[in-house]
Length: 78
Image (cartoon, rainbow, N blue to C red; front, side):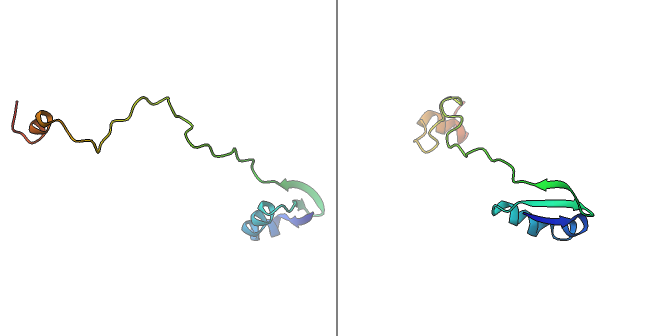
C-alpha cells in the first residue's frame, strides 16, 4: 500500500491512476491521517450484439434497385 499526501496526489495524479490500474493500492492522506483510497472502477464486460433482434430488419443497401424506383430517383418518372 502506498500512502501519499493530498499535495503529492494533485501533483502526480496521472501516475497514481496508472498505479491503481496496475493493481496497486493508493491511499491519500491529509497530513498523516489516511482519508481516501483510490480504487479502479468496475467495468462491465463488452458485449457484441447487445441489441440483436431488437432493431428490426436492415435493408440491403448493396442490392440492385428496382428499375422503376431508379427511374424515380433519376427524375424520369412520376
